[in-house]
Length: 319
Image (cartoon, rainbow, N blue to C red; front, side, top):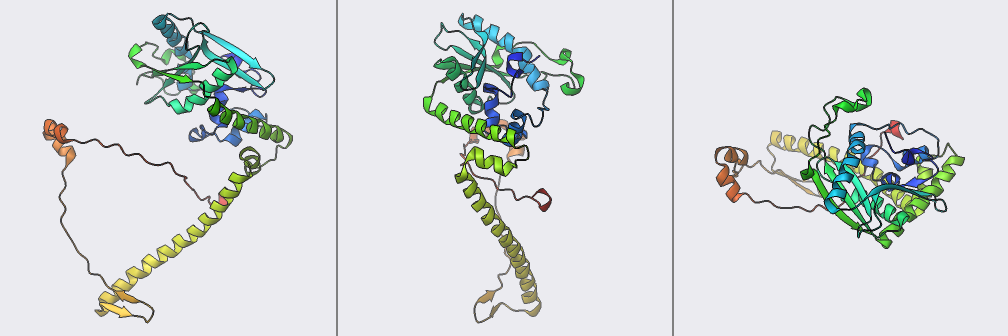
């Protein structure tokens, strides 16, 4: 069962677990900031009641906390603090004010612990509890952590594998960062302002909400991008027509035996097809037949890909 301190009066307070949604980090899981704001405003209910992943985290949390307490001879205990002036409520997985890293935050994860995803949460707890360091402890879920089919349907804890393996533990220390917290708090304040306006106007559109939450600069730039994107879509249609016309011209040149043609404004030339041989190694077969040689000459390169903006045009029915 979820900690009641986290769920009671959730519309009234901002908690650490709210930050991923406020900062837009939950968009990849299908929850937009606007949808989360409507939940906070009481317009729509929070339909998410948990699943096997969240439940596993809940049942393993005390086990992991006991392990950390025993390993470091500390006494992390769950605690809740409420800052009524700012409307914050911090529910930490553990605090021990007598150690160098007073805050404990516990997460279970799949392939890799997303430190960036949880950093804002740790900053929130350090701010609300006025501490300078947070121990982020991740526990990698085993493949067979849940043997049921769908926890939301079965709702049966007996399907969980509760065996603890200390080799699945990863630890990261996150320190208080006033500059980062200032940026986070700026977003929280903007979010609360937008939610209050949403409470008074349930018919507010997502575009109107975004203007309040993100500010006019982002809206103006996004609108400019939308106009350019619409122009690009028209160019893509022209590009398709251009490609088709080139293919038709090539076939006509073939049919009439023409190599080049001068229109007066441009010269059109037919380029004959060519072929050439390339040499490649079937790495899968090499690895299968001689893994030692494969490993000897295998080279691993790390490619850093720069972040970018992805534009997806809406269909007419979605506008």
